[in-house]
Image (cartoon, rainbow, N blue to C red; front, top):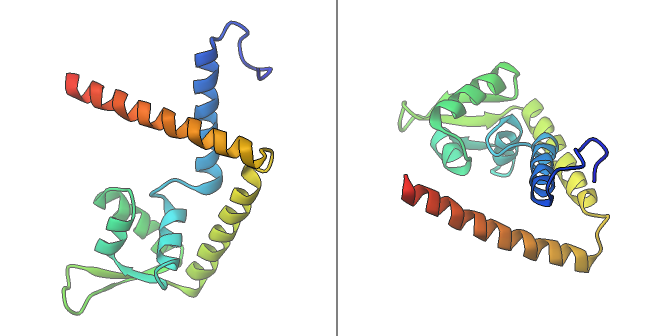
Length: 151
């Protein structure tokens, strides 16, 4: 038990609290699915450019949130937006040289974190953890469907 946790917390409460902490930790160190870091890496992995529609389809955020993040990245000089000649309503999103460098740095940091994140576990422990997490995810997805069915 972590020293800052109440001694009377149930095992379930402790597990869920730790899962929450791990989620927060991953979000801080690896990035969310739709923030600036993931969008830069998506662009980098697509030769530095995509249309805004393609970027939206490759990310996990809404159209409005994507526009907001792109405005911030453009303001930081990390990308440019250019209307497509074939459809002026669509924009080509292109990394600048600084954007490419930042995206490469983000990807390198993510890979380094991934390499170290589970080094405390041996191969058998990693396999067991993955099986347990897969079972838990399947269970939570069933619970989610049950909640949706009752609403």
